[in-house]
Length: 110
Image 1 (spheres, one colour):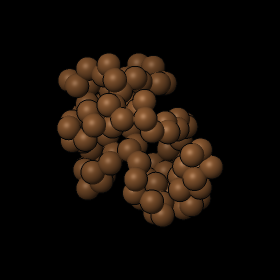
Image 2: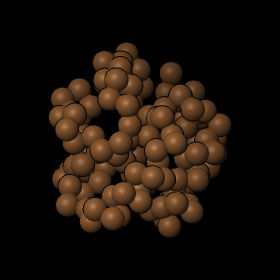
Image 3: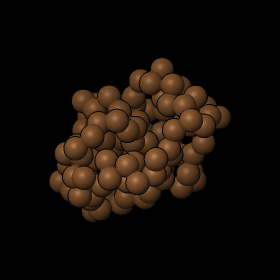
Image 4: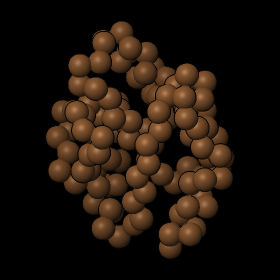
């Protein structure tokens, strides 16, 4: 479901000016983790973060919890949080977004 619905709708957003933090269970089965890492490894704005909670503060994130993604990109994003719009949402594996959602929400927020 994640590969077919959720990932595809994020991949086809009409803007790439966003980061997507996928919060995953710290005890996720290693085979499932490997599979998800393979799926998202081609996307530079996608990060896999081991997390017990449903929200994470990028400004105080322990980088050892980041399973996938460029740490420097994540650090730049964390520094920019105070000057940019931060949109939080929750997508389950079978959820998806219209291809215009991120651009439109950003336009309305600024």
